Length: 142
Image (cartoon, rainbow, N blue to C red; front, side, top):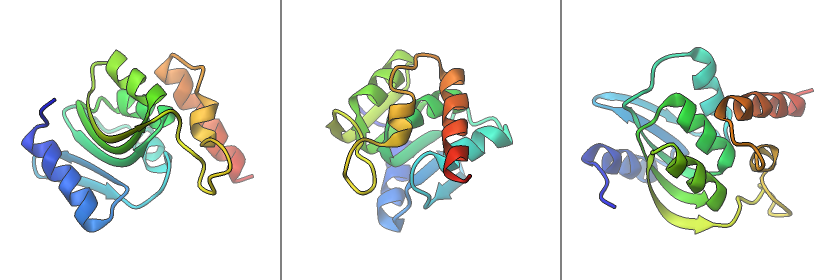
């Protein structure tokens, strides 16, 4: 699969600057260093229109994949992506390029699976996944 120049530029920026996430459309850049889905959840809550943007992301699990679908991202380049995440993106016709495909995303201390991916593992609806991910992130802060 051939990636667009814009997507290639976003992925190169991600790698060069050490970002965890880069969204790009023309000259508009949104970058972040946060791990996990926190920034994607924040962008969805702000409610701007991100259709037509491309995304470069270090790690994409199924939770992040649903959020990218809701953000209406058209093209993604991932460093690491899980098989469930790739299935979601394909189902929603998001062009996806990746460096490494893994069965599941591991948690930060590598003792099990990512809690965000586990939260939506059986989910098929992006809106329901969004609500579940919001609830899960709120439970971490209580």
